[in-house]
Length: 172
Image (tube, rainbow, N blue to C red; front, top):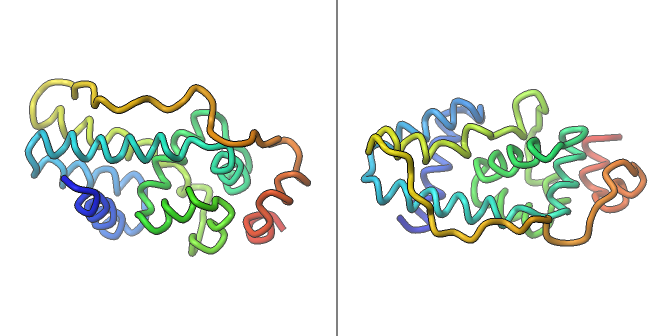
Protein backbone atom coordinates (compact mmCIF):
# COMPACT_ATOMS: atom_id res chain seq x y z
CA UNK A 1 0.00 0.00 0.00
CA UNK A 2 1.37 3.36 -0.96
CA UNK A 3 0.73 6.73 0.66
CA UNK A 4 -2.05 7.64 -1.76
CA UNK A 5 -3.96 4.43 -0.98
CA UNK A 6 -3.50 5.10 2.75
CA UNK A 7 -5.04 8.56 2.48
CA UNK A 8 -7.84 7.28 0.23
CA UNK A 9 -8.85 4.78 2.93
CA UNK A 10 -8.73 7.50 5.60
CA UNK A 11 -10.79 9.90 3.49
CA UNK A 12 -13.37 7.33 2.40
CA UNK A 13 -13.96 6.17 5.96
CA UNK A 14 -14.25 9.76 7.28
CA UNK A 15 -16.70 10.74 4.55
CA UNK A 16 -18.84 7.63 5.09
CA UNK A 17 -18.84 8.26 8.85
CA UNK A 18 -19.89 11.87 8.37
CA UNK A 19 -16.94 12.95 10.52
CA UNK A 20 -17.76 10.79 13.56
CA UNK A 21 -14.36 9.38 14.67
CA UNK A 22 -15.77 6.23 16.32
CA UNK A 23 -17.86 5.39 13.28
CA UNK A 24 -14.86 6.20 11.08
CA UNK A 25 -12.76 3.67 13.00
CA UNK A 26 -15.43 0.98 12.57
CA UNK A 27 -15.68 1.68 8.84
CA UNK A 28 -11.92 1.69 8.51
CA UNK A 29 -11.72 -1.78 10.09
CA UNK A 30 -14.41 -2.98 7.65
CA UNK A 31 -12.39 -1.66 4.72
CA UNK A 32 -9.08 -3.00 6.01
CA UNK A 33 -10.35 -6.55 6.47
CA UNK A 34 -11.05 -6.63 2.72
CA UNK A 35 -7.29 -6.36 2.16
CA UNK A 36 -4.53 -8.89 2.65
CA UNK A 37 -2.65 -8.88 6.00
CA UNK A 38 0.49 -7.31 4.53
CA UNK A 39 -1.53 -4.38 3.18
CA UNK A 40 -3.05 -3.92 6.62
CA UNK A 41 0.46 -3.79 8.09
CA UNK A 42 1.43 -1.25 5.42
CA UNK A 43 -1.54 0.87 6.48
CA UNK A 44 -0.43 0.54 10.11
CA UNK A 45 3.10 1.67 9.18
CA UNK A 46 1.75 4.74 7.37
CA UNK A 47 -0.48 5.55 10.33
CA UNK A 48 2.25 5.05 12.92
CA UNK A 49 4.82 7.13 11.07
CA UNK A 50 2.37 10.04 10.84
CA UNK A 51 1.36 9.59 14.47
CA UNK A 52 5.03 9.89 15.46
CA UNK A 53 5.56 12.89 13.16
CA UNK A 54 2.75 14.72 14.92
CA UNK A 55 4.47 14.41 18.32
CA UNK A 56 5.40 18.08 18.60
CA UNK A 57 4.99 20.72 21.26
CA UNK A 58 3.23 23.03 18.82
CA UNK A 59 0.59 20.44 17.92
CA UNK A 60 0.13 19.67 21.61
CA UNK A 61 -0.40 23.38 22.23
CA UNK A 62 -2.95 23.52 19.41
CA UNK A 63 -4.74 20.50 20.89
CA UNK A 64 -4.69 22.22 24.29
CA UNK A 65 -6.42 25.28 22.84
CA UNK A 66 -8.98 23.25 20.87
CA UNK A 67 -9.79 20.82 23.68
CA UNK A 68 -9.51 23.31 26.53
CA UNK A 69 -6.68 21.22 27.95
CA UNK A 70 -5.00 18.01 26.74
CA UNK A 71 -3.35 15.37 28.93
CA UNK A 72 -0.76 12.98 27.51
CA UNK A 73 -3.50 10.51 26.58
CA UNK A 74 -5.76 13.22 25.16
CA UNK A 75 -2.89 14.40 22.94
CA UNK A 76 -2.28 10.82 21.77
CA UNK A 77 -5.95 10.51 20.81
CA UNK A 78 -5.85 13.96 19.20
CA UNK A 79 -2.99 12.87 16.93
CA UNK A 80 -5.03 9.83 15.83
CA UNK A 81 -8.01 12.09 15.17
CA UNK A 82 -5.82 14.51 13.22
CA UNK A 83 -4.67 11.71 10.90
CA UNK A 84 -8.32 10.78 10.47
CA UNK A 85 -9.03 14.29 9.16
CA UNK A 86 -7.12 13.52 5.98
CA UNK A 87 -3.91 14.49 4.29
CA UNK A 88 -4.57 18.20 3.74
CA UNK A 89 -5.58 18.86 7.33
CA UNK A 90 -2.88 16.62 8.78
CA UNK A 91 -0.02 18.00 6.69
CA UNK A 92 -1.22 21.57 7.15
CA UNK A 93 -1.39 21.14 10.92
CA UNK A 94 2.02 19.46 11.16
CA UNK A 95 3.53 22.30 9.13
CA UNK A 96 1.65 25.06 11.01
CA UNK A 97 -0.53 23.98 13.95
CA UNK A 98 -2.12 27.45 14.16
CA UNK A 99 -3.46 26.84 10.64
CA UNK A 100 -6.02 24.47 12.18
CA UNK A 101 -8.07 27.65 12.70
CA UNK A 102 -8.61 27.68 8.91
CA UNK A 103 -8.28 23.96 8.17
CA UNK A 104 -11.15 22.91 10.45
CA UNK A 105 -14.59 23.87 9.22
CA UNK A 106 -16.15 23.03 12.56
CA UNK A 107 -14.85 21.68 15.83
CA UNK A 108 -17.06 20.19 18.53
CA UNK A 109 -14.89 19.20 21.47
CA UNK A 110 -17.56 16.67 22.50
CA UNK A 111 -16.83 14.44 19.46
CA UNK A 112 -13.89 16.01 17.63
CA UNK A 113 -10.29 15.73 18.71
CA UNK A 114 -10.52 12.18 20.06
CA UNK A 115 -9.63 9.48 17.57
CA UNK A 116 -8.47 6.81 20.01
CA UNK A 117 -10.27 4.03 18.11
CA UNK A 118 -8.64 5.09 14.83
CA UNK A 119 -5.30 4.24 16.40
CA UNK A 120 -6.41 0.64 16.89
CA UNK A 121 -8.15 0.07 13.53
CA UNK A 122 -5.24 -1.61 11.75
CA UNK A 123 -4.45 -3.82 14.75
CA UNK A 124 -8.06 -4.90 15.00
CA UNK A 125 -8.28 -5.62 11.27
CA UNK A 126 -5.03 -7.60 11.28
CA UNK A 127 -6.23 -9.69 14.21
CA UNK A 128 -9.55 -10.39 12.50
CA UNK A 129 -7.74 -11.45 9.32
CA UNK A 130 -5.06 -13.61 10.89
CA UNK A 131 -6.19 -14.53 14.38
CA UNK A 132 -2.92 -13.21 15.81
CA UNK A 133 -1.65 -9.90 17.14
CA UNK A 134 0.10 -7.70 14.59
CA UNK A 135 3.89 -8.03 14.62
CA UNK A 136 6.27 -5.17 15.32
CA UNK A 137 6.00 -2.70 12.45
CA UNK A 138 9.71 -1.91 12.34
CA UNK A 139 8.99 1.80 12.78
CA UNK A 140 11.24 3.85 14.99
CA UNK A 141 9.25 4.94 18.05
CA UNK A 142 8.44 8.57 18.71
CA UNK A 143 11.02 10.40 20.81
CA UNK A 144 10.46 10.45 24.55
CA UNK A 145 9.79 14.19 24.44
CA UNK A 146 7.83 16.09 21.77
CA UNK A 147 9.83 17.81 19.05
CA UNK A 148 10.26 21.58 19.16
CA UNK A 149 10.10 24.23 21.84
CA UNK A 150 8.02 23.38 24.93
CA UNK A 151 4.75 25.23 25.45
CA UNK A 152 3.56 26.55 28.81
CA UNK A 153 0.01 25.21 28.64
CA UNK A 154 -1.06 27.02 31.80
CA UNK A 155 -0.12 30.46 30.45
CA UNK A 156 -3.09 31.69 28.42
CA UNK A 157 -1.26 34.80 27.20
CA UNK A 158 1.58 32.63 25.87
CA UNK A 159 -0.90 30.29 24.17
CA UNK A 160 -2.74 33.24 22.61
CA UNK A 161 0.56 34.64 21.34
CA UNK A 162 1.81 31.30 19.96
CA UNK A 163 -1.54 30.32 18.37
CA UNK A 164 -3.20 33.65 17.53
CA UNK A 165 -5.62 32.32 14.89
CA UNK A 166 -6.71 29.31 16.96
CA UNK A 167 -7.08 31.50 20.03
CA UNK A 168 -9.14 34.11 18.17
CA UNK A 169 -11.47 31.51 16.67
CA UNK A 170 -11.92 29.08 19.56
CA UNK A 171 -11.22 31.04 22.75
CA UNK A 172 -12.41 34.60 22.24
